[in-house]
Each structure stands twice: as structure tokens, then as C-alpha cells.
Image 1 (tube, rainbow, N blue to C red):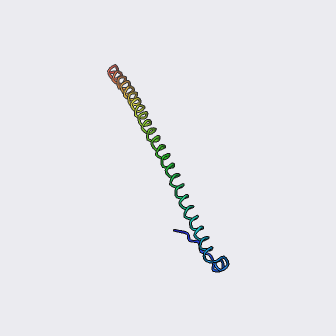
Image 2 (cartoon, rainbow, N blue to C red):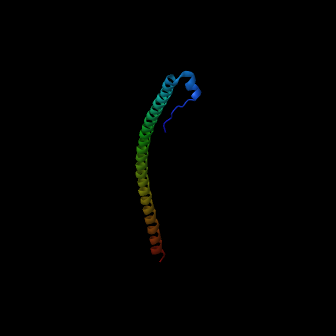
Image 3 (cartoon, one colour):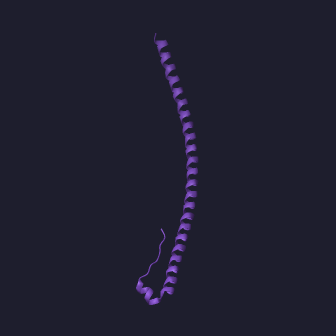
Length: 101
């Protein structure tokens, strides 16, 4: 929403229409420049934020992939241990049944 400076009639009467209109134009021009500068700074800051966010998300994705691979490796190791212990207990139970008959 554009800002438009408006001065009182008394100001116009005291300094004259021409000088007052120049002053109003100057204030409005400064406002437009300020808004443009603020908009440009916001766009630059957002671009930096967006780039940093993308970088961190890429790092996070990489870490998640690494964690999944590590978790799969650990699960495979536990599965192998579980099968080993099941075989040991099964063999022991079968041997005990055979010997006790």
C-alpha cells in the first residue's frame, strides 16, 4: 500500500504550494526508495535462508541414509546372532531328548 504524504493547509499557506508540493514529492520518493530497499534486502535474506535451508536438508537426508544403512547392518548382525542361538538351543534340546530316551 503506497504511502502518500499530506500536509495541512496551514503548511501550504505558509510555504506556498510549489515548495510544499516539492517537499511532499521528496517525502514520497524517499518512501518509495525505502520500500524498494527493504524489499530487496528481504529478498536477499530470504534467498540466503532458502539456500541454507536446502543445504541443511541435503545434509539431513545424507545422515538419514547413513543411519538407515547402519541400522540395517545392525539388524542383520542381530538376526545372525539370533539364528545362531536358536540353532544352539535346538541342537541342545534335540541332543537331550535323544540321550534321555
